[in-house]
Image 1 (tube, rainbow, N blue to C red):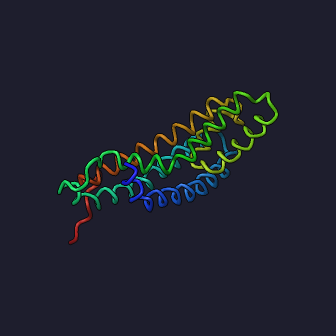
Image 2: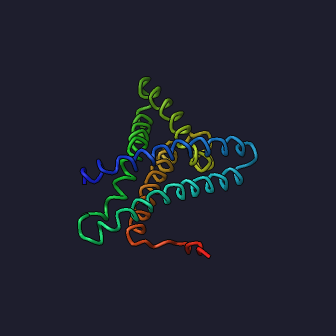
Image 3: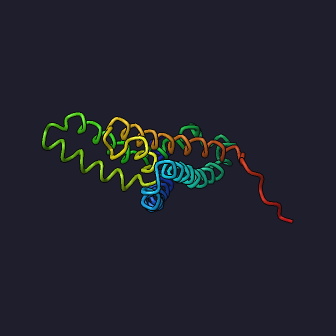
Length: 183
């Protein structure tokens, strides 16, 4: 699995770049809708999250389709976990940051832990911009740190799942939408 991940470090990098772009996109949408009401903020947050999932789906499907000949010939074994491991590698920094945030929130009476907690929260808001609208709707002003951590952890798990499923569908060359006709 490690060798498969090393061979696909470009895909991990591509997912990281996609995440950065979607963080900017989601943050802009959140800032635009934040004062327009919770319903609109939540709707735009869900749209942003689904759009991000679609942006992850395409390159992971292409990676699976590229690996299809090797899978069919039996040269690539253990391929079923490749998409999940690539997605997990790209989401690992966010998962770790969310865990640090959660642990420091539990010990927020301590001055150092409270400072780390606050810094992690600010970074999570910026770097997970496409999920911020959902998080702020469910945990206004970030007061419920359990909900904040749950939203951001669930977001990472969603992206890992989309990566894995897209890769598997790519190895089968199954597309949810029919190809455009050449004619």
